[in-house]
Length: 295
Image (cartoon, rainbow, N blue to C red):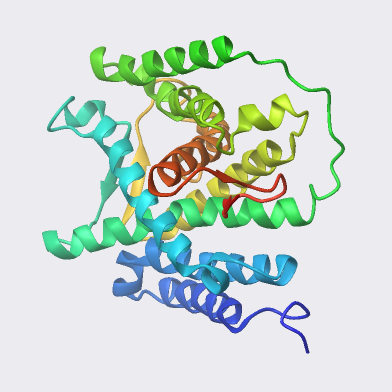
């Protein structure tokens, strides 16, 4: 049986991790309960990568582990940036936190391991999910009318994004939380386009909406899974938001789910920008997310 006719072995390992973690969680295992988020998302990443390999014939964990490690490292650094926006010791009282962590590992060194392990799965989970969608649901999506974006417009978008990113740091208000999940799309993606790297702006200028749509759907899918798996974990997070915060699905206020789709696009724009600092100018096929290829 060929590699593309069945899942690669690490896909079955990933599925096994998810099933076993769920079983141990609901039988009351406290170790798994405290480390549930990084464990279950590691399983998800392994499973999603195996699906990408089956559909594409290549994937980060099979074809380019260096790219996968870079992706995971950028994911960790990017989420610590988002934590900076939420950090009480710099900006706000505990009452004003946008999200709160509960029942964390008491040992600070192990707690940091848990943070970084969980953060390392965010970008891979989003991008591999989008890759599966691009190879299936959005594979033959027709091209749309190109969107006209001049270089001046791209620069203006980046300036607007910078203002959106700075405002929540200058004016401390819980009402500005949504800006954090939008700002870096406007700030970074136009820069990627201006520097001839893969970008959503560049896609739209060619009339190709597939990558954007796949990332948006990926954000929604992963967002539901984040909140679903978080709800029963022992170490978990909750939210404090001023708008309909009492109307929830799991722990997430219902309006918060609208933030997950743009969050996926934002993460991808940050990833491409960081990749551009580590390698020569590259091109990426219109139907892929994770792997820029050199000219």
